[in-house]
Length: 179
Image 1: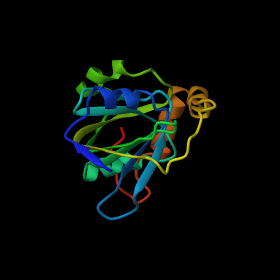
Image 2 (image 1 turned 30 degrees about the vertical axis):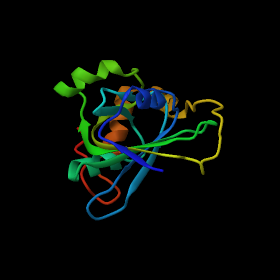
Image 3 (image 1 turned 120 degrees about the vertical axis):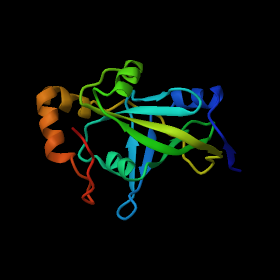
């Protein structure tokens, strides 16, 4: 049975820290819903009301476009161990750009990863847990290094050029405001 909470607590933050995979969902007012899997060591509970992840350069930048338009965001964590649990975080998302005062305050909490693009900050409005009984048990074999290797090979200037070629608008044509 689903339970709702006003914020995270220490137990839920500990659950989050144990997960190697999470999902983000955003949607524009009109257009495609974006659902993205995320991994690598990129997520942090900032406090019981705010979470953030270090967003790495990818083939698109849908999350940023949607958050600039309306701010709606859901994140989901799912246990793949023998102890089932699904955790959803609902709230108002914000894009934090490199060089901004918020970036400077938050970035030291994250691992310095090649290809970093922006921080995605979520101010929590509600938190939901549910059973997860239908989720299979999986075991992590290893993290993929492909994205980090790609960014390392491209270098800072190459990643920036890629971002300006591929990440300035969403697939629905919305601006991402990537600088």
